[in-house]
Length: 153
Image 1 (cartoon, one colour):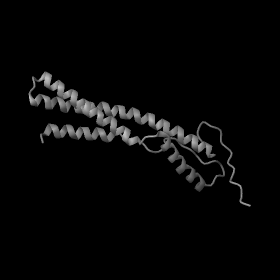
Image 2 (image 1 turned 135 degrees about the vertical axis):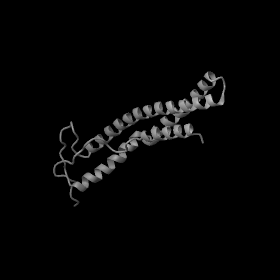
Image 3 (image 1 turned 30 degrees about the horizontal axis):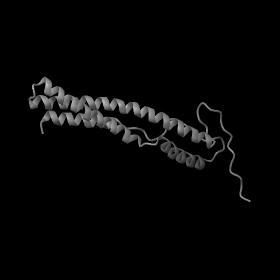
Image 4 (image 1 turned 120 degrees about the vertical axis):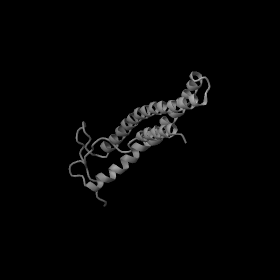
């Protein structure tokens, strides 16, 4: 494998690694006064699952899809440009494809980052709604009154 090809593949892998989506909330939620911490932990786990379901997609898969599609599109455009500008020489086509893949991966990583922010915002909203409905303290909303479950008769 040529050093240039190896360098391009390493750069693509590095950029693809940057496109990850957090799978947890980025907001702080506190238990209601007097609410047992164990109950809060159960609410937290339930609401994380609820928020993940509300997204309807696996966040990491969306990000990787953007990076991969950007790399493929960039390689095709770069190879075409290399063929046209290089007079059809294989070295020019390969160089164009490598540069195109690198640029396409960067563009795909940028799109993945935008998707990441959008998905994170949707996740956080769903998580906060669930936690508030469970009686927990969510910043910016009045403190809900926690009522313990009724005792069995």
